[in-house]
Image 1 (cartoon, rainbow, N blue to C red):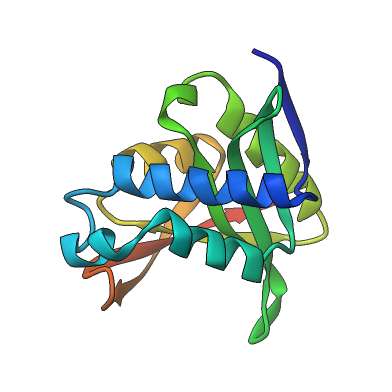
Image 2 (cartoon, rainbow, N blue to C red):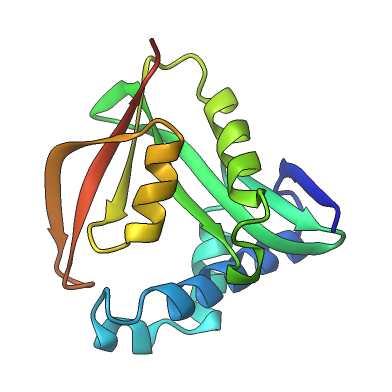
Length: 160
């Protein structure tokens, strides 16, 4: 296994990102989000979204295969706070350090921000434990996504 962390650049990498999203949602989210929403999430839909929003994505590749990615940026209403918008790794790469490599690269990309936020499903205990290990703390903010019929919590990383 040779993992490379790099900026997403090619159409093949964008399609790889879409496959990661599709696989992760169907592997990790049953029972956490609305079954009706999950049933509508096709690989084609994931590809459409991936091609619409290719910016600020870094990917993890195992040789030529995209096995994970993360996206970041800022929200217009709080440009002084960095945000991790997405982080996904294929289940067969759990525990192999891929998530840690992606997070390290993401925190470096957002190094000018004293505060970095992310939203995670409240019931996604595995992801919450990972983010806690990376220094993120839940700040008490929650929102309910009506499409997913699930509660998300906000976690914050503060540089000391």
